[in-house]
Image (tube, rainbow over all chains, first blue to last red; front, side):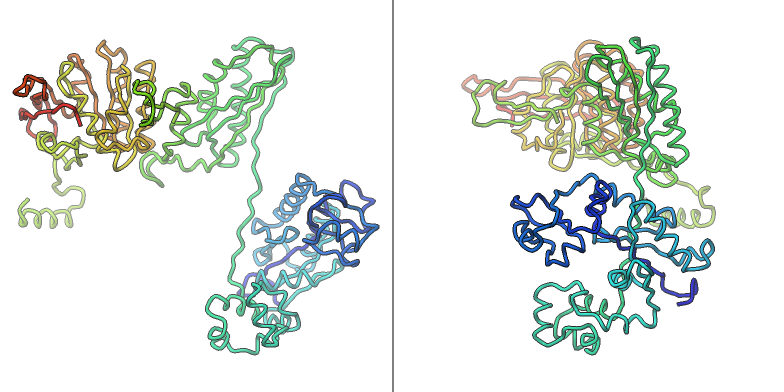
Length: 405
Length: 225
């Protein structure tokens, strides 16, 4: 495949072992190379979430009960899934790929991620160097060498990655896509049970047999919906990458040494933090609709306060105007040791361009948001809803049920 | 507008663009009040949208009943709010007019400032009709809040109704596009002497959208529903 001249985008699929396994290996490196089964402890009534290659070699498969898995692999290590560590591994994989290109998407399979390579020709004229760099970067980030497949569509690249080894990428030329897929069983296609059964009854067990059927004949036999599977079998996958966007966390914190117990000083520091948060927002073209303030007290639980805004705020003045009344009203019972401001509900700041892009002044707050903001500022009893209770006592106060909106 | 005049205006608009003649005041959309006589009285078919209407008159003249009927009618179509500063709203009474109480937000502020802030926020958020029930006492700070409030209401196409027992302040009279003055002209008794209803006279004291000075009379029967 000629680099950068192909009309179709070059899609690279990066496949690593299940992130739960990677997380377990990162926590206890000694588990590498040994049968490892995740999903719970051996005696628990649960099923296998994932298993290492060594455990699979002994017959363990995903979804199997843990008791059954223990019978297949009696010497395996059983562990529950560490959800937080798994999420960190997955995030780390995507962030690593995001350093190469913004065209990164998470795959449905947890250990899978996709990249578009066709826009990287100037930065990486040599495809092989790029793929080697990706492999090295992932190894550095999560200590696992990925299997890499490159093809003209997501489906074909995923199949290629599933059959590639960690020693080198499997690259499928666009004109050889059909021939590449032909050798695989139909199980690589996303078949529902009925369609799989029909195909097997007809003796169609490999993709080449499926490719031999004409498209009209396939549609007549299996219906319009099944044509998607047929197209995949020919290597035609029209799905587009849904770009992954790394989470943005904008937080500024300042220890108060010695602890502060007057609001003037607190406001002064809050103002300085608001300026720092504003600078971070400005540099990324973002606005915030909620500032979360955490006040760590010396000998009392931390206070958490939220200042909400009707539309995305960016400038220090706007942020501080929202924070200041909350700080003044906060019931502080002990000297403060630390103040933290975190920008939440981030949105693009451009929506405030008055009248240019959006009608009115560029914001439309939902009624629920507006009510929540009013209640937060003036108390929950300000905006109420009334409900008439027909079956209640005849006293007016009993017949009307008032509740915060 | 005659067809020939409209054609001439179209030709001028084509030739001169923004310099072409245009209506001095574009027609103001109206929100039905829920009472046909009142719709006719306003001259535009209901409460003007995006503007302030004042319902003035002494206690017991029927203005709050009419405002609540309007709220009930508007609640059938979308979100509405009632800013109840004196604490007089009776939701059960509203429900007799088939009001959708799930569309009604009742704001019970402690001060005029809170009330105005609530109206501004709710108008911007898309509430269609907001009735503001003012206390009898002079509402300090209202005159300063009104310009901002009206700007928001116009922007959000929200209809504002102000209900006031006493003589309205000059600022309210100035900013209101429509002022209806209510008077109880008579009690209606049955032959057996029981009170049967209330005769109400309404007059358009000010109208920026149609000729003022019109009057109407109708009876509010008891029990009210």
